[in-house]
Length: 254
Image (cartoon, rainbow, N blue to C red; front, side, top):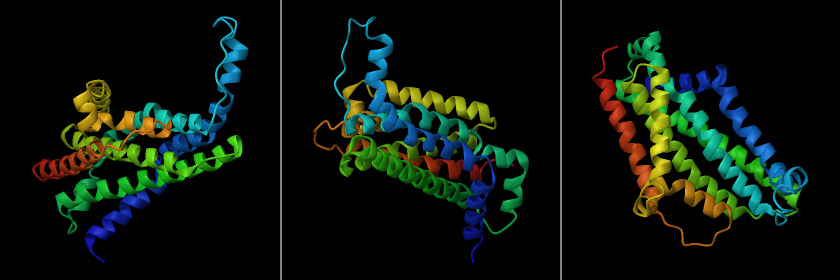
């Protein structure tokens, strides 16, 4: 067994044995379980609590698409911010604690150290998203009596590329910024810039800035031709960011 595969197993065990196995999975599980119920009863709650203040506004009956849209919105507004904060120290925490130095005494290159982290945590995120999407799908079928699969799973896959992109951003930031809080703050700044950039149509159409709106449109059942550019550019940029992080980590003093 190679040293790289041993390090990958160590990284996976670390996820299982530390607080990461509780925080991000707990958030995604809560969002998956609560989303369909919230989508089902929101119109009734609004009508009961604020109907008179809104001029007896009557909201249309909710459908399964409201549940799907709620899932993607929660991922954008809650899960993504949690991911940024959780991964603020994905590299720097190990360099400051001396764990990275210990690992690198084995036949594991510095580049492999970064690339393996990216691969293991990408698989972790994809697994969490798959479980959360499955729960949302099943619960939506129970609550609404119907739950066609394509819109939900396609929207979740589009969002996954955004999640992987932000994970790659955090790997790079955590490589160059020694402070976990500093890296997390910079990551939130990148997330804000992506959100603002999506307002400009060229960026929305041809860059990762359009991933959020594209995932939301698919989940909401808005029939439009799928534009691959935001997904393609996000995947390419993720690879570039991880490669840059590996290059910088090779030159970093430990």
